[in-house]
Length: 441
Image (tube, rainbow, N blue to C red; front, side, top):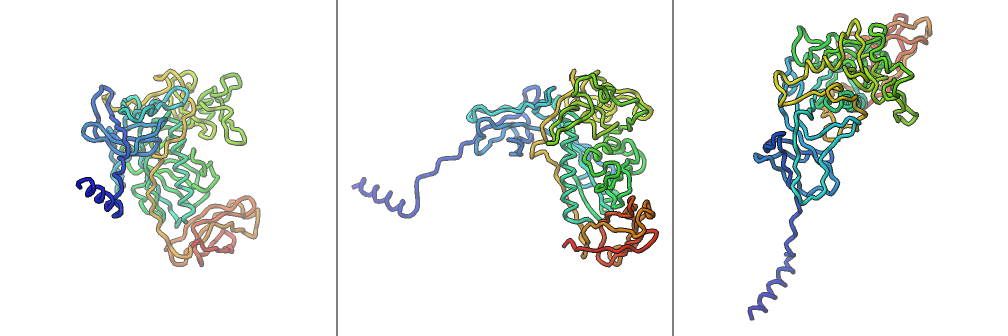
């Protein structure tokens, strides 16, 4: 009788939609330890480049579902935050200093923890020798920018961070960017993007990122101009080489060449000027230095190491890495982070893989929109070549109260203009220019 009642009860439960209890999703335990073997609380754990969580008080994190065989794991721990002295900086910081479990090898490969058995506890070990330093940048545009321009600049910062990461042997990257148009955040910005396409990229001071140097040094550049390679992400990092690293230029003939290997035909092709195939593959120059001489031809920083040896110049008197060590080493200590140079490693490091997705820059947009913004367009002065070099100005109708320059006419009296609105007036030294406005939104 009891068995009959039990069978009936089971049938009723099934009819009511109560099926068998589902099996729990398998998880995998991760333990993060420091270099001395002690568990680390508050460490961030990444799986295949994606942030999965933070360790608890015992240094443990459970990954659910469990990672597959072959998955890559790494961890990082924040050791120090450099505060910003600039007024109004979002979050109040300019640099984060991390320890990680990722080792960068001399050939450019990186060693993560590879999961071989998800049932086993995965142990990640942090080391001060695996330092990672993240920059927090603020960039202010001085014009009313379009959504497309914001999209392009977001990509520019991402590409620039990949270049910086490879340039510094996996030790520096752009962690976060505040990006605002219409001169918002100007006083807190390290970078001012100009709509005037004739502006040559430059920094007003060598240094002034980590600490005050008197005033507020700036990088000025026209990001959509070809003037001085302003459109190239490498030029953005070159200018940050001045402001954030404190480096001077190393142009020839002041230093003969930054590294003689880059202009030599007899050395290992890896140290010559950068040369690519049509598909972008690097043919020569994977270890070429120095980017403060020519960032387009260089992938690495010059150092004391013989393969990237610096030739003293009038502006940058010693190797770039020597200056960087002075600015970014753990002050008075070596247990939190160690910035490693080629001479410390005994090799100039090869090409690194791109940054994992979880370390791509976080871009915080502040796009202030005015109505009737026009798409970029080429304006033409009817005087042609005789008008070349003349400055072009915009007189806003309503959205701004002052005139501003957008560049100089090219050799045929032409100029691409952006940031202009319907019914604004475009003026060259000779005439009022026709402006066929196509509204962007």
